[in-house]
Length: 97
Image (cartoon, rainbow, N blue to C red; front, top):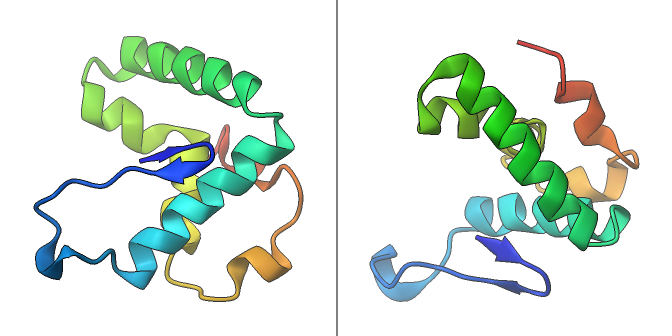
């Protein structure tokens, strides 16, 4: 979990190290947080999650549908993603299915 400015991880992570993919996923969230000046990111995140939870009726499905998560999951396997990422790119994922 990315909570600016750190990444929190569960102790059960295999070999006590985070994979490159998980680290990139969380770095994408850090970039999202920075461009939204941190606090508004968390407000938007919670509000979008509540809205999607009301639609999907399942917490995990609402989480997976979040624009921030969809951007991160869609790009966490591309090592150079943050070098080419456009500002506010998560907006592209806001209304997509």
